[in-house]
Image (tube, rainbow, N blue to C red; front, side, top):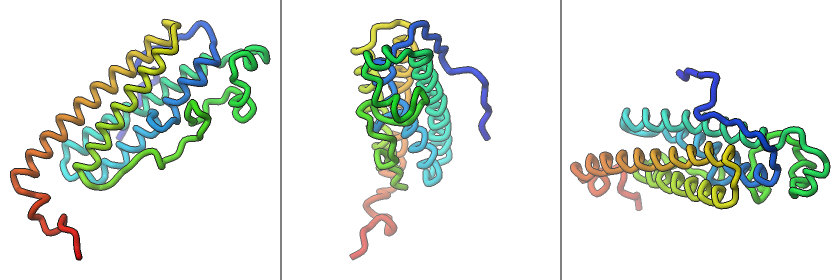
Length: 200
């Protein structure tokens, strides 16, 4: 089903390792609004989407988010390669280093490990699309926060690319919600469909 091209969606070539940057960017790997959660959310929601075009949209964006996860992993890896003990201590990277050395591990910048509790797959087209819109905005804000803290252009450029993709995904989910709402409203779907009326 998937075709894998062995290159990153946007090149990552970081010349200067910086564990301080890695310790905040890791949040987009396994934090509450990161790429791992996004890919799992969309690839899980796709199964219950009632319309083929939405199933396709969720599949496409979910797979793209896996590519973004790969980019974040590459950024964190390149920022933490060949560190000395002094680099680790000075940057405050020691707590992460003790548990993971310089392995890329799904965690938030706060140190809280990835949990699926930060995402939702409800099985209701309207609820799931609203979840997706919010998720894309939260990821965009996280990238904004990273850009406010990072000044190395080798790091900023791929982060800016990822931020732009969050905006595009938000736009696609907005279009999907409008089309879906129009379709459901035309049939008074939620008001009169017996399967959506709560039982007493």
